[in-house]
Image (cartoon, rainbow, N blue to C red; front, side, top):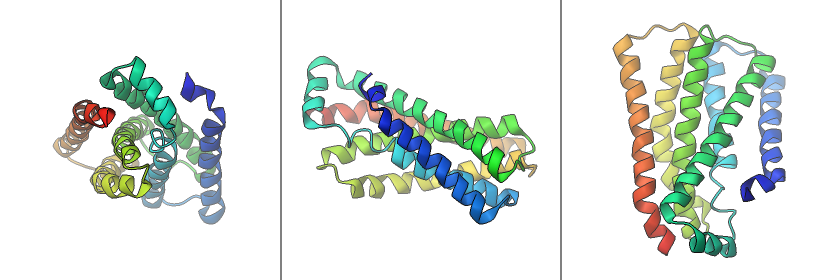
Length: 205
């Protein structure tokens, strides 16, 4: 409820997404599928950094002390993960709509691409929420979030870009696509487990 009261932050993110995609439209028109795919995932990365990664870093010490007195660290980090995931999924769906309206629609299998995009939004939000929690305890140093987060995000982005190519008609073996999907799911579960295990130590600091 406290997060939802900060409507200026949410609408600022919406404006960021819309203006960025509109600038891409002015600069490139309707790009080919490979460029379209790369642009989509780069936009999701920067949207996640702006929308999700700052969730902990915007919390004041007084509010964190209040949370510390009323909830357990596990409940707190799980609620943050859920909230960040919901926000990121909304941004992904908005990006899909704006990409289709402004940059065309080279996607051949739309349902597959939407599913991969939502999976990617989930993965990005989980990783950057955990990195944001760590950075917030290091005197809110955003550089730490980038240093810790991007080495984890780059393999995920490469996997997502490769996986989403199948939606543009590129042929992959079924086993390869399944392995990439399982790897992404495994990474997501690993981040959730790490968040539950590590955050209580950050919480007590």
